[in-house]
Length: 149
Image (cartoon, rainbow, N blue to C red; front, side, top):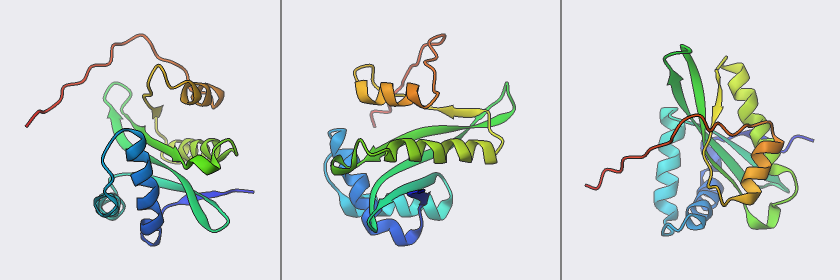
């Protein structure tokens, strides 16, 4: 049975709670109202695609993807930027279902594929992505410049 679907504005209260848990996991301060505003803007402006996982009428996880483009391939890519399942719902296949939604989006939009990054020490995530058909691409270096304004 499919437990995932595209997020809607009606999901914002529960989705913002999950997004806040996700941010706390990455050592950010809790701010549910800002999370709700951020997500509302993404949905209304169509800046990203967000899919949610449900169990018993409650949202238990989400994946958020942002569009990128490859000039050399002349196609869209999707950046799988956020994937989160709440602690009580882990190990039940929700992450894999959300990744399948992301893959379906990539197919439906005729994109070149999905890109993501995760920490080398994220053992669970690294096993999950490999089990879902993602491959480590180690032929390039990944750099970041941070605007310190």
